[in-house]
Length: 318
Figure 1 (tube, helix red, strand yellow):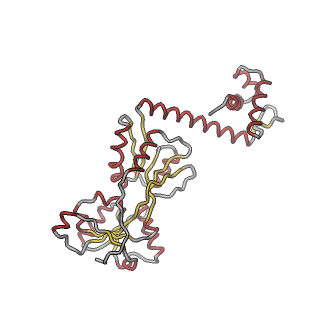
Figure 2 (cartoon, one colour):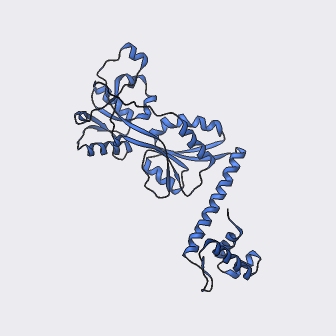
Figure 3 (tube, helix red, strand yellow):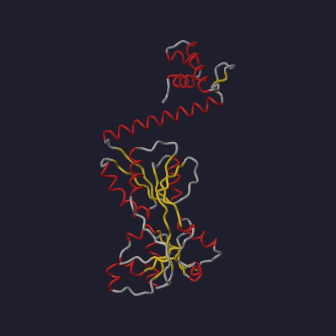
């Protein structure tokens, strides 16, 4: 909390001199000097160059000044959050997510959020992960759900879960009547030696999915055979099913939402490789206090089961 002496210090900086600050504060100049010396003694550093006239702030004073400004801003935000939490006041929350991720995540978490805060308006930004991280860093977004590593110093990251990237290929096993009723998702471990022989519908290089695939190929010294590049995983899956050949990189979180058509006509492989594992995280601005709304949405995302559990084990090749 900001103390009385902190306010005196801030007033001196704002006023530009000790004498003007004393007039604003309605105290004597010697008394104000005494308070500043007491503050400096408590901190163990000088905050001003006392040998100069007018009084000039030094490097330590600049650091403490910025600290106080940030503390005041956070305290104001905290009070606002407490008032909103207490009164269910109408508020807003700015959230970012890549559009493909959002169509699977948001229907899972927003109904639970609105059950607790029905009067809050959510402003959604759907963009690529890099754009969303920049928006969080600039303070334009409160939080963003992404699969990207942090590159900006003032952006923090809370890991919610680890997601896997699967490789889908057309099934060579005609779906039986029992399978059509069950619509089982068939997931098998993949032998890396299968990779060079596949024809790929590749994600675009600017997508995190595409970057993960490229890192995999580079580390295995494989030049992939590319049929087409597409930003849409569903488009690529439809294409390989229609052609009866090809392979698609698929985020595992879409599996629970797939229709029976995809479940019956595709086999999903899991390659135990760090390139095909990525953290699902929420990004926030370290210099801002998370609102009570943002905190609640994050807590909902943490406890929501929405990721398909891709099992490990040995299965025969198709």
